[in-house]
Image (cartoon, rainbow, N blue to C red; front, side, top):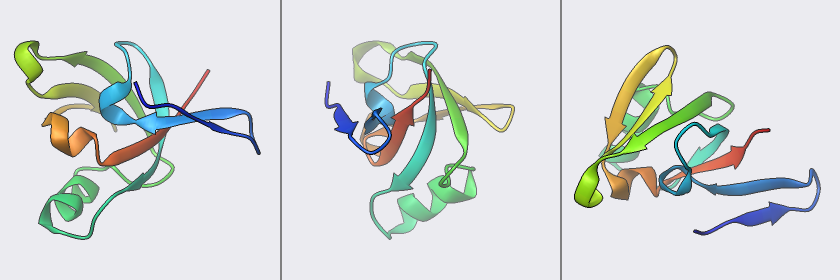
Length: 88
């Protein structure tokens, strides 16, 4: 698990794919400027939004999370591009 301690706020930063079921986080940014990054933003993965990690599918399948009252599954590689800050 890749975790980075943000010394300014005492917060922990990581990527969406590294969260455990039930954890909540605030989205910091999405890496890249390609079509996938654009589509993630269109689905609501934008800076400041809250996301709850629900589960990972077996055998490295997509991760399922809740954002804006919707449940969304994204591929693991896409989830690695979403930087988040863990909450509480």
